[in-house]
Length: 486
Image (cartoon, rainbow, N blue to C red):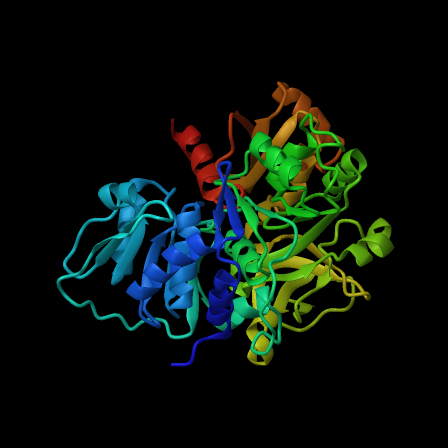
């Protein structure tokens, strides 16, 4: 079978400058050659089209493992190592995979040996994987043409897997002409920072983008303010990516313009970011915030702000998530599927550019509007709307109002069943400074309608979040249900 252009691109970049710096991790630079060595070992264990489960941690060895599966033309099945032992074990058992790769600890605590599942324990880049072969051949139909079975964020329920093809990822990280695009002949200058988890589409996209551009990068195991700031000061990137929760942490930190002086733009996606927070970040650091709209199902982004658009339009279109990107088509439809006029609200449908010419319109659960210039506003999730006594409450409006209080680090809003009203909004709030609930309620009364005011506000040390940084609404809802029955 002919090698896919994405697999070929990865292989050629890894061979480009074997002694050159590839990944900076925990204060140590690792070379492209070291990454390539482990990637080739994993490639030798993987058959084209074969599914390989990977418990994905943010380490150089897991990056190399992931690349090795793609070099072989296999399918990397993302397994989240942070979901709790019982759920991870159940996930692996249900997947019935012919091979599972993880750390030695993963293999000991999470993977139950079976006769039909080979296991591969990885350690450092230079360490040979510890392979335990299956004694029986498992029938695996495989996923021909599928590069990654990627987990969704799991914001409103259990994460599900989406098949992302080699073509989709190649269009995202190389371009629409990926089949003829030339491989870089020299490593790119500058160092990127990857702090998104590999188990999420954001981390996969950033790593593949860096590798396909032959750009070295600093890999963080998670976003942590001081370590991220140290990486920015050391590597001086011109662009960084921050999910809204991380961006708000930076905004309300003691960091100054001098700390971030190399950065020319911040991109932000995965969750809603208010225009007020974006403007406050720009006012403090002098850095424009370019918001975007993406989903795992699309294989990446479908809308976003360019720097040129930002400079021309932000003052009149602030709060938008930008215009269609990467060849995507966007439209807003009514409940019957008929397109609505400019600036009218409805359900967003997307034809992702990553799907190519054969892509169909994909109905989202996001309420949106698109203006005459093609700028997209996300108005909230239709499936999360709270109907309180006949009045519609959009959780994002309440969340945004709570987060506009200077003492609030983050908020999450869900509906709670009510015998008289059907549902009422309730909120979980994470603080940066102590504040009374009554003060927060007074703050909300000046910004929201009476029916939008939460009937309960729970102050917590930390809001439960998914790997992508979104609030885990299932866990938030469970908290209020548990409280009700306590």
